[in-house]
Image (cartoon, rainbow, N blue to C red; front, side):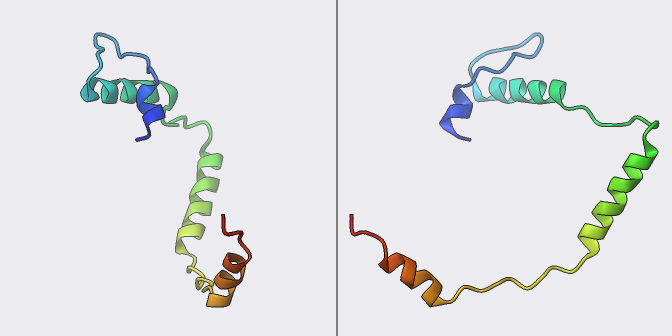
Length: 84
């Protein structure tokens, strides 16, 4: 975790607070839990089905071959850099 994140004051969970790592973890968990809720609304089954189909299609499609880099593609830009 970056130093910036550890310095940010998160809202303290009800009935707790402090400066220890455990308290920070609890505060982060509480903060994220209040911001993000699962979508369990049965009124949007068409949207859920659309997302499920898209995810299945994405995960079942084969991965493409990675494009390999040759040494000239790396050497030439490095040679063009200034010494300083």
